[in-house]
Length: 152
Image (cartoon, rainbow, N blue to C red):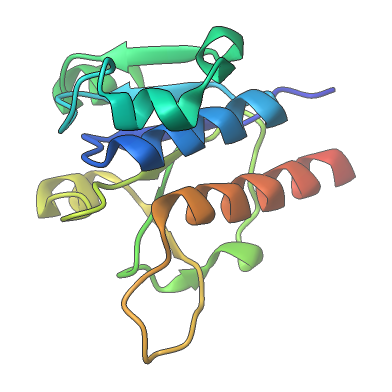
């Protein structure tokens, strides 16, 4: 199997969502990168209830700050998933070494991060609604990136 894109979470703030994303990444073999600070601690019982034993099977890398994340990623392509994106994620050509970045549930990513990333994608959805749950968004986009990479 070819290398799987990485999923990165920018300062996640809802423990249950992060736990569900850890489970998704573990099941699909994707590495998860978490940019701190998180809005919760990993010993939070809400986090533990959802993550169960999937934490043991996960490849998780923590970055102490966005600056450290972007410094380490300077020679890698980062793809930002955002409701402010103009390109549909299914129209984008994912590569096996991509890092797919998702913002905070409560605020997305700041403008300075938007400006650092060339590829800003969206999941098209009904205009009556604000956004999907981040764990659903990760599963949708990770599945599409895997589908595309397997075809190549």
